[in-house]
Length: 121
Image (cartoon, rainbow, N blue to C red; front, side, top):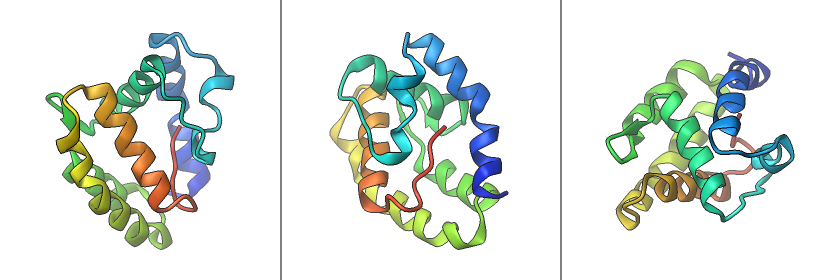
C-alpha cells in the first residue's frame, strides 16, 4: 500500500474513535505532525485506533502485531525505519498500566524516534 492508501484506510477508524472519545477533527488532525495532546480523551483516542487496528492485546500494546502490520501494509521504503521505531519504543509498555497511557506514549515515542515515517489516521 502507498502512504495515501494507508491514510485513507484509516478514515473510518479515525471517525469512530473520535466519536467514542468526544474529540473533534481539529484535536486529532495533526497527530502525524507530532501534535499529541496530553489529556485522557486524546490518549484513549490513540488506544481506540490501536484496538481497532488489532494492536492492543489485553491492556497493553502488542508490538509484535504492530511489526506484522508494518510488514503487510507499509511501502517497502518505510518498513525498516518503522520496525526500528517500534522496537525502540517496546520498553514504553512496561512504564504504564493504563491502556490509554501506554498507547499514547508508544505513539509519541514512535513519532519522536522517526517523525518522517510516522503515520496515524
